[in-house]
Amino acid sequence: MRRAHHLPYRNTLMPVIDRIYMSEALKEAKKALEAGEIPVGAVIMHRGQLIGRAHHQTHALKDPTAHAAMIAVTQAANALGNRWLKSAILYSTVKPCAMCAGAVALAGIARVVYGAVPLALKTPKVKTSSGVLGQESATLLCAYKKYRRNRKRLLL
Image 1: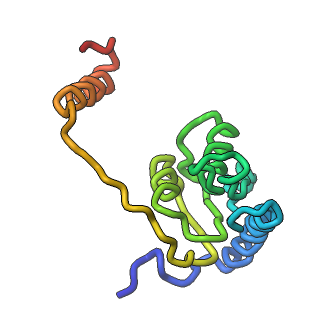
Image 2 (image 1 turned 30 degrees about the vertical axis):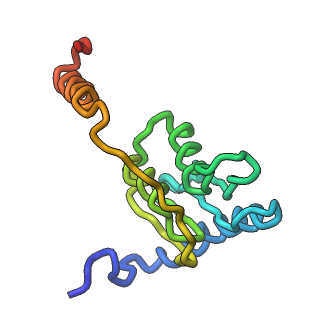
């Protein structure tokens, strides 16, 4: 049996609506291409309102995190005045990368619609070290969790 997110559209208008909003994402991707950026565009819709739109701007902003979806998520959160985008839909011309997917998950975006799967990109190997001041870091996380549970003054 196929999973629910791969089933055909239940609402017959959904494919039409998706194409309309994806065309807006494509407009953003064209802006990126014209600016010499990787041609990726994204828009975020919330209850029929476009609340975020962006294109890749990593070169222009000299910021490796300036992906279309990341910028659109920030705009959408600002538009709603809330970091939670629970009933929002992200339309992206390319499947979100791991960083963008993380932002989408943290924002609680309800649905992601994308056009293409990106070509394999070379990712640099990054050396990591773990456990450095691990106990102190864990203590801070525990204090934060306790604070969130009790909604009281943070005690360290």
